Length: 504
Image (tube, rainbow, N blue to C red; front, top):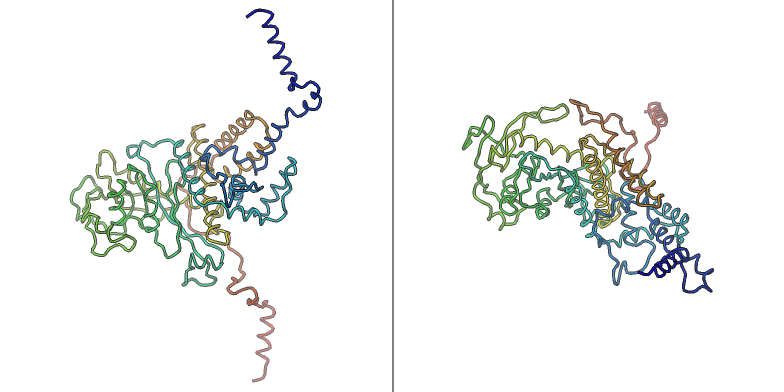
């Protein structure tokens, strides 16, 4: 290139960099102040969410999770868009004591700070926006967050490194509304107020601690029938771990026949080692189970007929004595028949790992306060349930990332401490303007979680008892307009004294 042409090109580059409007010099004074308004507008739009949770976890979810509809619901340009409503629900799940009014107040404060649109003081628009969200989006989000945590979790060497899944059920309480009573009938034999009860069954990944799938039903639905709807979530080569309620002949046969999934768990049947077909090692036998004559009530007739007439299983008996555990010696039934590839000690240890699912349910029902849902209709209660589970998977994925980055045991990182740290660090991330500074805060968050470990308490007993009693107020067993308070003790004493002094 000629030197004169090179100097001209350099001068043009300098002129254009210093002057953003080179083509209309007469309008330069009016157009020049508008050069940074696009970036400012983008920052304002990004700030119109709560705590900038999407900047931390948006990559964990599918990009087309809640697209804008072409017609009907969610087709208009609203203030409560699908994306914003979904993340507001997740923020509310991470703050279980927050009401819908508090969500609206947060949005009002953020909009006022960023010169955004004006919101109504009522939370009815937010409630209607939550009702418009489709439930299948929550199901996809739960599966995506579970896959993200499972991919980042380290693979164990026990049991040939195969994926371990655990299953368990629980019961949640719902508000006493006519729609809930119709969908989830309450328990009739309970004393006092009878609230609608929702039975849930969850599939749990032992490596990451995330919940992969959920099935829900009423109190009258059995856990086995709900688990049958989740069998499609199990892949070939998985190992399912369950307690005594899942160790029956129909489920084990169905897993082996349809999904090629192995099972580890206790069984309601009595296992007698004297009737073994082969002795593999001390307290390790092969036994033969015959199919019962009575069909299973939760299976279809065709499925029951397709099950084999007998199965060869493996029974492992061992000691798992730990302080605070109710069971001292267990007999575990499994379909892993090879004692060399699957030693008996690894099978017993895998069954003990099922206790992590018990602690996960405790984190959900205690820390995230999922034991009582607040949705007034079944659809809203299910969305609230999924939002709590997705928020739980966010925390579990955060724990896995902190443990793998800083080489600390995953069990030593506190779930409650991680939840508190995420709340405050997400608020700090919402105030920074650069991706570099946001990555630095995320790195510092992981360092904080790895440094703040739960103390190791070997042999600590965990009795099933509460330390502080609840108040002694009577339960509201009638509608409010019919309920009458119990008289005070002084009034009761006065009436009793008058009754004694009354002439016969």
